[in-house]
Length: 179
Image (cartoon, rainbow, N blue to C red):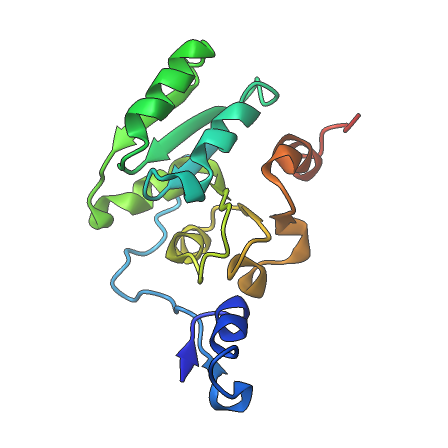
């Protein structure tokens, strides 16, 4: 049996002998365009994915109040989109949070390359997270919650326990003085 990550292997091992399970993560997509070295906005945070509760985008928007020098670009669509747009409006963040909607996979590289940060704010043990690999392919620094598969491929300095640690982590990695 094949599992995409160690957390998935743990789930499978409840029903299958652990020795019969091999972890083989999602791999690099050779069809994804090559890095182009486009101009980067160091203060832009990017999220790519489906706009549903377990992806953590609502919590990511909450953190924008502390990240006042940053913008957030949200690429994706889903059942939570209208709720998220209302949240942005209610918080007065319309000038710093942009919703791109659905974007064809072939167009994603330019979003990854322009961003200073890619954030994977998962709230559930996601099996892997292909968007993390895409961001890495485009040389965009990644920060993710330690939920599920991301902890199998990211360095501990790229991981946070909860999303409320994001502002401090970004400031720390940008070399700003952290209070």
